[in-house]
Image (cartoon, rainbow, N blue to C red):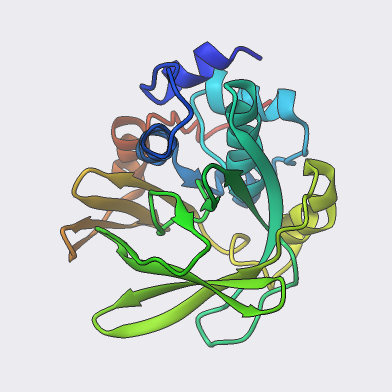
Length: 255
């Protein structure tokens, strides 16, 4: 596992100082070049919470992953280059307003002048660190803020078109990658998991986001969404050209 090779994977360079702007640039580049994706889940290729195998998948095989893989590996990188980073767990709010299985999302807290939430593995979300002190942050995907909902419990919210919605809640208790074993298995096999129904591949762009859901391609450019239906052949080509993923249709993605 080579931190420099990993940095090159998402067009980043070693940082000279561990400041907020350096952290923000790393997160933004990571989310623009390493997609959130569940292709292994759909093809029943097991995902193990082992940093070496995740590194091989993301760096050597030029793949993406879901939260345990992306945030697990990114947290390791941040620690390697000198940031005070730790993993935490979060409970996601589903579209209907109910909570998903508790503590099955993995995110990162980085201590700078104050604690910041860093999440490179939540798909369509902020590309920047968010302070825990209520300050609002706006990017192409919306306006975000974190509030302490109750003692020691924080909520990340996003505002779009005047409507604010809680995305997930979390505590600052430190977690290890292996602590997410139950959640990782759940999200690979349960029908209640968001990730077991169809392909999801998404990454940030300088103007917004590009997302593949099943065979539907959505490009979000400065808030405007453009949708396109793809054939299976077009989908395979798009995965390679847009996301750098070569989809072998005859064998699983990983052997």
